[in-house]
Image (cartoon, rainbow, N blue to C red):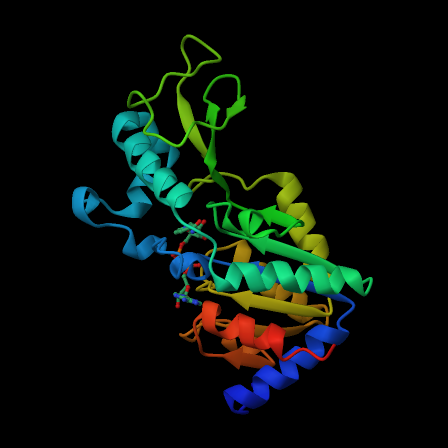
Length: 256
Ligand SMILES: NC(=O)c1ccc[n+]([C@@H]2O[C@H](COP(=O)([O-])OP(=O)(O)OC[C@H]3O[C@@H](n4cnc5c(N)ncnc54)[C@H](O)[C@@H]3O)[C@@H](O)[C@H]2O)c1
């Protein structure tokens, strides 16, 4: 692990980003924290304080109490729609533009379901855990994007099938991740030469496994997170700052 100061790490990482052939980025809930969207462990407040997220974010919880689970997800959906991308989202969109402009490759893998990367202008986004902005029919699987106001009923009836309900198009604990997203993330982790891990606690698998995969295939890893994680020891550069502070500085320090 690097023992350089943050300034030295920022300069070295900025130089490496400007030269990398293929940059892969993995983001977690920490990237959206500065947009006011709480990380999972912090979401349980007010109305929801008696619930454990791990017991709401499961297919079993939805089968047992679809009204409560859909109401909780709708509350979070509206929070995501009301939020704005922050300086970290914007800096990642700028990094993608600059990388593509010099004919490099760029893949942004996110565990976030809030769509803020896309709203900031990122193009090649791989959504590992789906999206809370879209909901899907429990029977037909058809997707819809509900308007930015509370759903009319909990649980919401499906517009696509008389016996169906709408559920958020997110991956719940115990469910498979979308195959195409896993394949795209796997390919990027193996092929990239620089892997940035930002705002993720690196304890949720398989997402955390992509950091290990990239490292094992020879990529240099950088971690941006105020706290250490189980995978910090794999990182050539660790930047212990908030993403919205660190990323604009790193992009600004990149040689033209
Ligand atoms: N915004 C979203 O879409 C959102 C929000 C909450 C949860 N989730 C879902 O729940 C899963 C688990 O959630 P989780 O909260 O444990 O996420 P996580 O496992 O990705 O942990 C959050 C990490 O962010 C770090 N962090 C906090 N503030 C930060 C900042 N300003 N800059 C950089 N890093 C910061 C924390 O130290 C922690 O390591 C996610 O993978 C996701 O699928 C999504």
